[in-house]
Image (cartoon, rainbow, N blue to C red; front, top):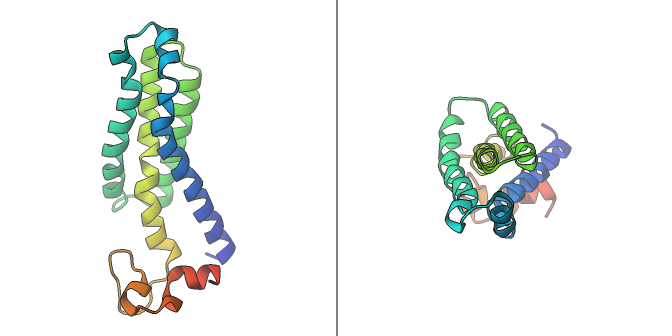
Length: 157
């Protein structure tokens, strides 16, 4: 993979990670409107947030395990598609049940991003050289020489 494609991949993963994390909390602002629109109690409408965060947390662990068995590109594509489908379904939802199902579908897709972003970094972006393979395979942690860090070679820092 050439340097330009690597930079685009990092940018894409950073944007996706930002959207999925923000999506977990941005519905706090809309909770009163959702409750009013669908005639819900606060305890009922809070599941829009809680459902997303629960599925997102559990799904992140699941995708991490799936990454050992299924190609990363396939998992990331499925995650992006589920997240996008959940977003469109949530936007078009005519009732609370559909909205809640859409949020859970969003979380199922969004959970792929944090789990797979690190895996992509380890598998594709960082060249595996030398004898050091720490948790994140960052050579600078082992050699204590910043010129060996992955970002030094990549960004020209």
